[in-house]
Length: 285
Image (cartoon, rainbow, N blue to C red; front, side, top):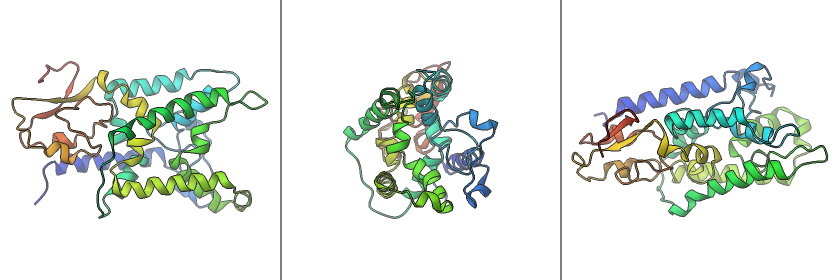
């Protein structure tokens, strides 16, 4: 017997897979560790996807934001910020649920049978500190002799970059293996931590560390599409809270910055009390 919402989950998984392939069409490049550097790299993917991934056709928005913010010519990335604001204002954090390749990986890892853990709410705020310090402040403040800033998040933290870019390039380029140092060991440890924790905690990186999720989450309350709960229909059965991959209670937190708009609660609600609405819909709450 199929679980409630099976069709919706299948559609979302297909969209996630399609987004992964659209962002990474050059899979053959993994064989030789070659990077695509064509005109499509001028554009950013809506999800976290490393520029240095051999298969990548698009840039990472966080990497692009750091690169422009820390350059000698520009101090603010209007293009990248405009892209993120457009996605966020239309759909809030839905890009995390439907378009992010690293989010798809975390969801697949969480399906591995294991005890499942709940993180304290305090961990939610770490990603905002990561956004402020490593994406906005350090690239602009920590510059070299030429005036260019260091893309601190990519350099010191990003597990997606280590997995998609660092490891494939190291495996295919012996000259890179010869200069590996402590920094790569630290980044490999962060990647391992994120992958292991994703087995036990649903979307661990999204909850705790992802600066892109922090940017989108800030616009959840004002996005055109959002969740709405019909309090008349709601029986407070708790199904939506148990199934939420972000550990939320949609009845109380339908507009939370943590909601990734995956609509698991919409698909699973037995009373059809949780629905997707737009700013032009008549409120149910």
